[in-house]
Amino acid sequence: MEDLIETKIIKQLKKNDFSNFNIIYENYYKKIYFLSLKMIKDEKIAEDITQEVFLSVIKCISSLKNIDAFEVWIRKITINKINTKIKYIIKYKQNTSYYDFDSLNNLISENELPEELALKKEDLHELFNGINRLPDIKRRVLLLHYFKELSLKEISVIENIPIGTVKSRIFSAKSSLKKYLSLKKL
Image 1 (cartoon, rainbow, N blue to C red):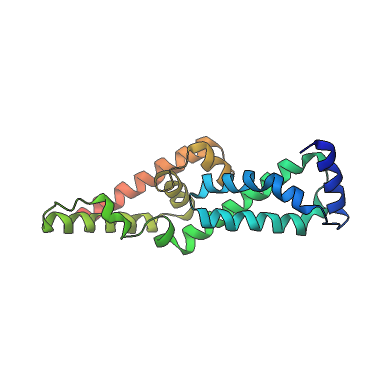
Image 2 (image 1 turned 90 degrees about the vertical axis):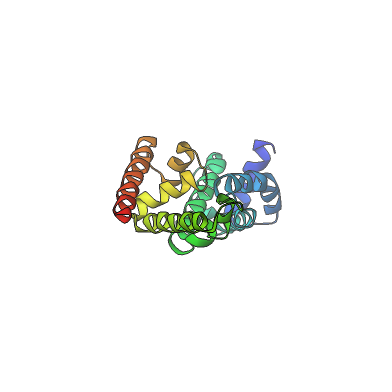
């Protein structure tokens, strides 16, 4: 979309004239959806986030100070929505989104002896108990990195912290987890 047309439409939106909102929606939908999908890796949640972003645009367009910064502004809204959703998932729905014991069967071979199978399941259960005991800031980065397979840079954006801090939190989480698991083995 031409910058001039977009600027005109954004000015209309700021005046509560949403007659051309569909043009903005069509122009930004894919960008928002695929950014959300890249970070969340779940189509349904990415779709929900995309809709939430557009609702926020409608509600908060009057707070946009610089019309030329609309794309940056909508991206920031998207990142904030993603961050909020990830924090919610980690805090309230860990077992469904980041790991569940049904999906752990993929990690276990069907050809294993029952004793080996039981030991592996027990080890995985202890691992997740250890993860749940981690402080929230450590647990989040660990889950984002190893379970959602996000890069350090992506985690840095979501958590709004430097990459070095992401690295140190992952290292600290792994150290705490190793300590917890070694105590459980005694």
